[in-house]
Image (cartoon, rainbow, N blue to C red; front, top):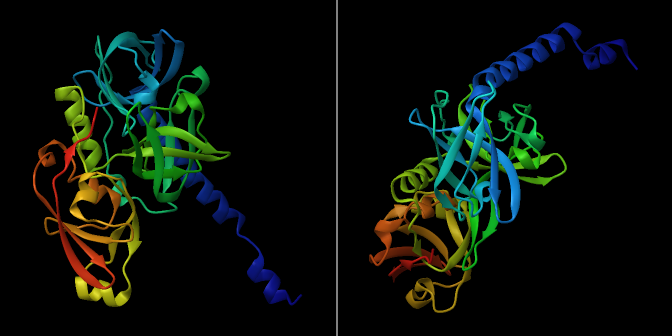
Length: 322
């Protein structure tokens, strides 16, 4: 092998060391900021005792966790890294987003900064802080390995996909559920929710839709949603379509539920949903933000692309059974 080729393939130990030091400094800084603000939860119910994590949400003792962590329980205890233990009660839970809000009996640490998962990119550094296997405060780091994932959830009456889930290779264990997923600046951009396989974890994103859910849970104890009765998936428009309609994406209808509002309006599997009430759609979150309580029973105009032609359908959403 020629000498110049060998030189090009060699590495710079000093550069590698500096990069590792920078990576370590970021993870250490995020861990120091978040660990005191993540609580270990203990919940007792008729099914026995369970554990998980929760993140301080507000200065008046609200914390956010997963709905599956609290289950059907109404109360439990939260322990922080400094040894403080306090009771809590469940204020509200939303199994269809896997979000729950709890209220501690006593004072809690100041809340962390919350970011916006919509700004994440594949490859972004993330740090997970939780309470895996009852060990308070462990920290793992990795990168965002995929965005826009869907995670199925089911209640006794309804099945739904949690959209725009964050996939990361930061190691998660079952006790991590309800803990924080943070970006490199220590901002919480997700709530860890599931282990997706060896070396993969999923987190519910913190975004505009999540904030609406949290607000509803704090103030009403539940989330009222409008129901269309369709399953969709993000789809890219062709370059010609994108230029003509001035948007790059749409939602492709995969399933239309029989006798649902979507079926009654004439929507069909294969339709490309471009807009609702004139607002362009490009991802699942852009549809979900139209389906909160104020949409129930309200006339909704859905613009779809079908066989190359624009079709407008009028839908009257019903309330999704709780």
